[in-house]
Length: 173
Image (cartoon, rainbow, N blue to C red; front, side, top):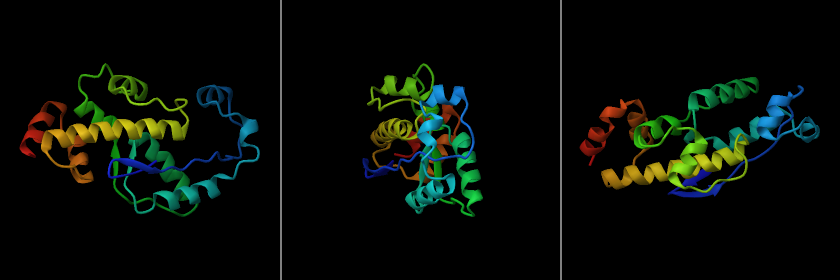
């Protein structure tokens, strides 16, 4: 998902043929079958297109440290590297949404009453739900500090102990 000025403006989606058999657990988790991948483009084509989509952008992922490892590995296979800024919606949620029962994507979707989009564990659907959660958290921060936070400030919040976030937001007014 591409988000600009609080609005979703574009999206990227493609199945990709990994060249290996997808086991039953992954098929059940994602709803993606081996038959669906037979005629899909190879990983290298999809990742090249995805790189073009994200180049020059900042990225957000729910559990960034997990997703970024896969992104980096796939891009490395095609001699590309994403070097833009990145932020983790999971870390931000742990600091901004401390009243949530937990910080799993599905829990946050319900906690914030944001639109549920499709099926969990499908990239575009998860990206949409992450985007809605992200926008809600950015709105909450904006309300508290009186301005739109930039990525550097978001990263600072993510690195701040949750007990000190309120003071950081108050000081940033």
